[in-house]
Image (cartoon, rainbow, N blue to C red; front, side, top):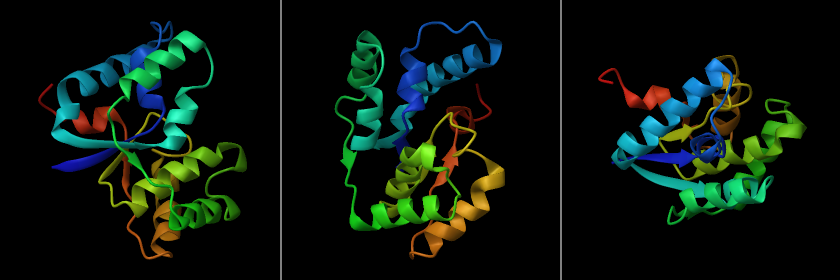
Length: 158
């Protein structure tokens, strides 16, 4: 079975109040479809970084986000994870203000996760950034995980 690392935007959009903007509403809908109908096709993982991010903000929403991830195994933040994340930041592949995004990439790659599932299309699911991410991770002897959105994993049959 394929593996998927659940990044913070997934539980955030799944549990969010209904969006007013069309694009955001579509992403919420696609997230719910993937989570409810397709997540069982994957062995899911996340990290303490995801749980920490989910615990921030509105207390009621934080509980809902955290509860959604209950039972999903946490991947270890190893020395390799820290080294790769630091290099992603040093090379400015990921901006310093988005340091947690570097952790998500590194932890999924070090643990050989097939897919990093996210709606962060600025720093993560960004094809223009992919080569630099991949080259950086490869420099440490790892294969970069495929970074994609839930829509990418739903397939054409829906």
